[in-house]
Length: 229
Image 1: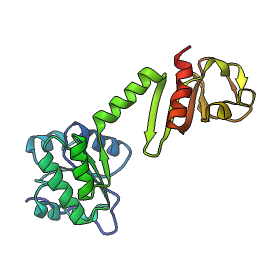
Image 2 (image 1 turned 60 degrees about the vertical axis):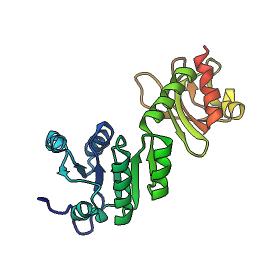
Image 3 (image 1 turned 45 degrees about the vertical axis):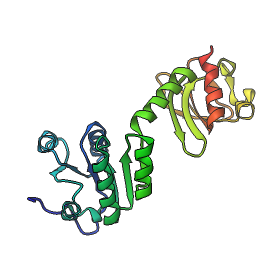
């Protein structure tokens, strides 16, 4: 197939990215920017050529072919990302190949909930719905007065929001926000200043932003206070 297996003794830190569509390439590029070594695989020679200079290792191969995966040495990778979801058959066959090769941490983009269920049953560890996740984040920002929002599976969320009016020119000890709203104020970000971890004696000014965490509903309720002023 014209390439050497990407395998080095004792090195499983590199991440395997299969499929260089918008999502796959975005993940690969971000990992490279973080200093992470990446092996990117796509079956389209034009795509491989386009990103050959951008990413460290880019290889043309058919990920549906277990033999091609074996020649790539995918069994030496602990982390892999399946970046394509438009062709569900390719996505599923690729996932099966990675599971059978023993990759221990597989992430895959899903085009629908049904597609995601199939991937999960095969053995994919993390199913990602990028469009849905981004849509939910934007919706929360529009309605809830948040500038950033992250929700976890176990009813826990973290958000960044403007301080509510009742907190202006007061310390957290004075207002007792945690007990009142059931959230934890992690820190305060003031315009032009560094992030500061929240303490009981921290004084909050108008236009300060707060990073809060807690149960999803409590965080949403707290963030809506800033939105309504």
